[in-house]
Image (spheres, rainbow, N blue to C red):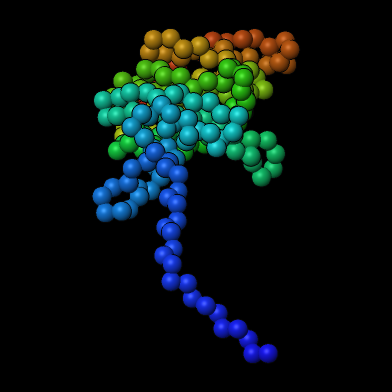
Length: 218
């Protein structure tokens, strides 16, 4: 038997139903605006939450800090080392044109670690030590001698960790810090003859514009 030829319907085909509305209104011309990139938005606080989320639970954030040049924020976090353990890092962000951008990433040279939430023992806080237009950040990490702190500053034009000089510790961190107006003090164990029988010595540091360092006071 010969095959029956297919017939073509002349009835009009009803239009497909429109997709559900998402509530977004595209710009004129039939195009739809692209979704916002992470860390963008008119409100810097929720946008910052998006930026810091990938750092995981072991991070600390200064939150949004308003300056004359716009909002900034500092985030401390851990980076695994090739041998063992971690090195704490500090990322500095600037909020410009509705988006957070990383402007610096600084490795702290003594070591230690940022503790995971819900611990509040390793915060990032605003301090005023250098007289810089931007506030300075005190970054606290957990260290084997106790809490250690570094000062991150934009004094001189770029974000960097300040060096401590003239005390028991060189480098960019001091142990057992206490912050006061314009200064920070370190309580250091000399470990002589050993740490159990050592003597604690307190050294106070102030910023020296001449050297660009945190210098021990006499």
